[in-house]
Image (cartoon, rainbow, N blue to C red; front, side, top):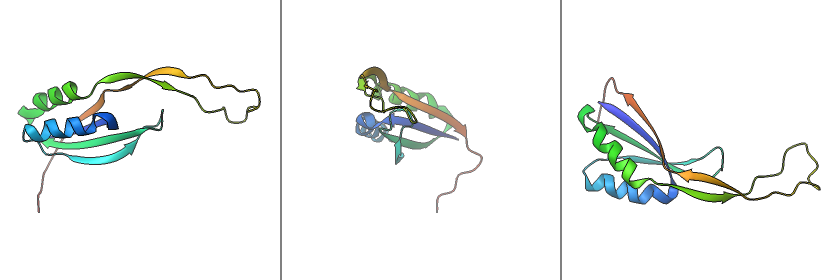
Length: 109
């Protein structure tokens, strides 16, 4: 058995959740926040049998897309904020960060 932890952008969350349910995979959704852009993410916890890992990874890949987004950096700490003019920077967001972990035991009470 494996635990798949998938961190996805909020924009992809509902699409991924629906695709997992359609294929009879259950998942626990947790609200999370990204460290770089400080934007909303959703973390999925998905427990699956070893042979189902590739199928779940395909579902995640098909439903979580990377996209370009404009991001305005915050002013530097300790610097002079009067002379700092933030310019929007285009960054790639979205997609999914996925971890697959072995599970030693599983209990359902």
